[in-house]
Structures are given as C-alpha cells and as structure tokens.
Image (tube, rainbow, N blue to C red; front, side, top):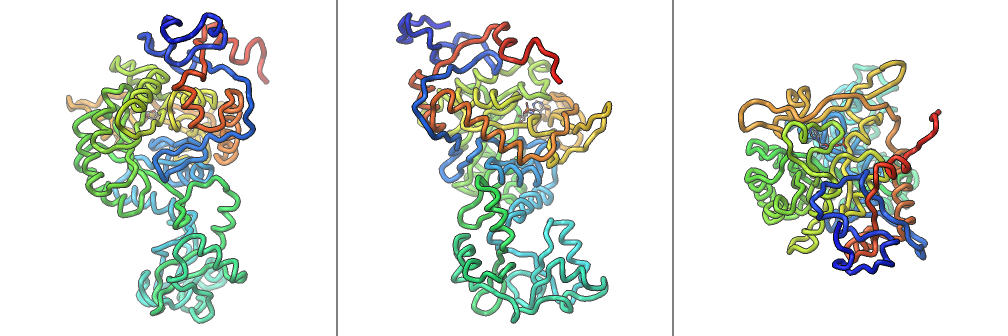
Length: 507
Ligand code: IMP
C-alpha cells in the first residue's frame, strides 16, 4: 500500500477509502473480488452509462459480446445491439459465412436496405420460404432481371405465397409495381426521411425505393419503425437505421481477404483476435486495415500492459481489448504462467492511455461474473466490458442446449479449447512450435432464456452503481477515478465472504 502522505491524503481522510492510485502499482495483481468502490454523498438526479467507444460509436449499454463460437453469431449480435450494446461475430467461420452473419444483422432491422433481396417474376413462390429460411424475412422485390438496380415489377410477401400453389410463379402472386406505394430515391436520404414518408403514407407498409427510371435502389418497411420504437437504446447507424455489428479477424495474412470482404459488407468495427495481441503480425494487420479504411474502429489486443498497447495504438488501432488468462473458460495462466489480475490490467493500461499521446478506449475483456464486476471494470478505467460466459446461456447464442440432471444448460467453450481449435480457433491460439497448446476448456452454463430482459436489468444495475458512487456519466466516473475523488478499498477474504450471500440456505 502506498504511503498516504505521498499521495496527498490526510490521516482523517482515509476513512473515506483510497484513490485507485494508492491500491494499484504495489506489485500485486488485483481483480474483481479484491476491490470495492465506496459510496458518496449524492446530489445527482440523472445517471447514464453511455460510452463513446470511438467518436460516432456510442453504446447506451457499455457491453460487448465476445467473438466466441458459442457466444456471438447474428442472433446474439442483433439482440445485444437492440439492447444498447454491441456484438462481435467470431472467426471460426469461412469468409462467406462471416459476411453472411454481418449481412443478417444488417437485414434484421433493415432501416433503409440498399441491396434488397430481389427475384424474377418467373421464379417459383417457394423462393419466399427459401429466403425466409436464409435471411429471416420474407418480403421480396420482383425486378426484371431478379437483382437490385433493375426495373421494379412488383413485390411479394409471405401472405401472397402462402395463398399460392408451390408451382405458381412470383409474377402470378405479386402486387404489381403500379399498385405499390414507392418512394423516389431523391427524397429518401436518411432513416428520418423514410419515417417521415411512412407518416405521410399511413397505408404504406413495404416501400421500394426507385430512381427516376423505375429501377430499384432500396427499400424500407413499417415493421422496422415498430421494432425501433420497442428498442429505444438500439445501436443503429443514424443514416440507414441498420443495427451496428463488428467482426473478429485473425492476425494472419491469409485473413486479409476476410477483412476486405467484411468491409465491403459494411461491418462497423473490426477486432483483431489474438490471445497475446502485441505482435508484429497484429501491427501489420492494423496497418493493412487502416490502408483499406481510415475510419473503421479497430479493436486490438488482448493486452494487459502499457508496453504491449503502445505499438498497437501507434499502428492505428483505437480501442484496446484488455485481459489475459482471466476468462471463465480460460487456462492460459495455468498453462503458460503469463497474464495479469484483471483490474490491475485495466487500471494500468487505462492510466497509461490517458497520459499518452493516443486517443483510445478500453474494453475490459473476460472474468466478469456480475454487474458488480462490470461496474468495477468501468470504475477502474474501462469504457465497456466484453462478456462471454455471462451471455453464453441465453437463447440467442449459437450453442447447443444440453439437458443435465433435470436442468437445461448451454454449451460454452473457450476459443482455445480442443474442440474450438479444431473448428478454427488456431488463428487466435496458434502455436509457433507447430504443436497446438490448449488454453481453454469446454463446459456448461445454465440456460438463461431471452437476452433482452437480462440486458434491460443490466442497464438498471449499472445505473444503480452510478447512483451509489454519485457519478452522472462515465466521463464523470473516469474524471473522479483520475482525480482521486472516487474511492476504493481492498477487501479481505472475510469482507469478500460478507459481501456475498451468507448464513442462509438459498431457495
Ligand atoms: P468470460 O466472459 O469470462 O467467459 O471470458 C470471455 C473471454 O475469454 C473472451 O472474450 C476471450 O478474451 C477469452 N477467451 C476465449 N476463449 C478463450 C480460451 O480458450 N482461453 C483463454 N481465453 C479465452
């Protein structure tokens, strides 16, 4: 523990707890259970945990789902973006499937779709079911050559195909272009324009956007207006109204094709997925992405020290993923003896970033078991948290449900577990020796139902933490962290035990 006089505290003041500086930097790795924030007199009446990951990418709920093959594919990414957070699609997928995953998120709440699914009038009505199976929706535009950019002939929705015989053609059942409400491309430049159009045309439901020659350039629907109203925190692109989504890529040169394809598909963030992410390969990959796109947010990592972080930010990354060997399924520290207690890692990297020439934010990745842990990560300098195990049990994750002893569980595995490595995880955990080094395990987490109510509760819990420490925003929380007015204390084992439910048989 630091000398309190050296850190400018009076003996009288120590009753209020210690500035973070006094607890970290003593040579001990500290993590969630070790530290507790102190409450303060409160004169605020509004609280927000909204984080700005980078300018223009703002999350009302500072939560990101981990790029793991039992956590984040399109359904998780959709739910989390609707709830105010952000999903990152994992890399154990071939390039075409990665792209398809991003497109599915974008199409799930379409806003303004710039490449609507089109078919020819001679195609069979069975196409509607096929499209629904693949993309999750059933409205098709019928154009002259079955593609966007071609002359609009009509529109078919599930209702029309359901009433038809399978051998009938789409042309037979479609609403003809002349009977449709269409919008002129010049009038629809943003999602607000689309909403205004729907207000002025109360009978319109699915609206193709056409240019003056009658060719299709897009589409929007009233379903999305309703969906967006139900999800006030949804993280969307303000111009298109589409949900935002990120995707992971490896440090390997072969993944450049994946990067180009994901950028082409309109991915909103790229994450370079590497267990020890401070390498020349990561730096080269960041430079490559920056050459392709100067603006896309790049998450680099994982790192746990400032020295690891520096080359990544210098190369052009603007978000750091912090955490090593602390995930719930992780054996990295046991296998390699390398890593860091998570709150120490977050604090030291965040402090260094703040004092450096770089503009970057921090995602606290791994080891989070409660909303209290999430708050501790934010209070020690993170702008958002990344969750694997915490989300893995929800219905939307791409993992199998496993019944066990009369209860329902979902499979959850580390990307460095034997099974995930076989499925492609070598990119993150590849071994220079040529022999695979397993750094994760596979297990079960309780099935926990739909994600949406859990995310709503999480936002309320984090807001409650802010209320208790009397900080009205993340900026305020961080300002108090750095000026030392946010106070903490170390917890003894007894205090940890006391802070959890005790002396009770839980029912
Ligand atoms: P959790 O939220 O504690 O379950 O941790 C999730 C995090 O663990 C991920 O975001 C990764 O950083 C990390 N991770 C994923 N798979 C593995 C693995 O197999 N070994 C070590 N760490 C892993």
